[in-house]
Length: 84
Image 1 (cartoon, helix red, strand yellow):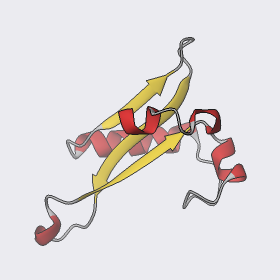
Image 2: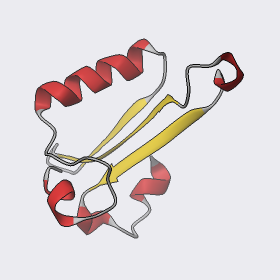
Image 3: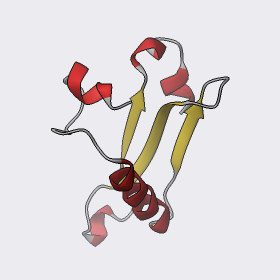
Image 4: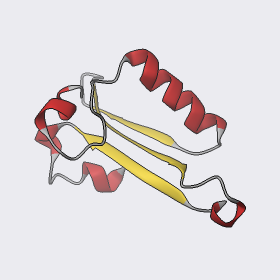
């Protein structure tokens, strides 16, 4: 999944994300009681993930979230993003 940053413009990351950073992000999302979903291939390798995060902190946005989806490049157009 790290190649996503180097091979596409469809991300706001500027540097590869470390495992520790991802773990921290997962923890933060789950602590907010929002979902973090993962898709694995038949060998157990993570090939995609999706998560919701708070859109804004203001009370008016309390029910608004931003959805982010990352997929392995070879899964585009196969319905995995829709499944997530």
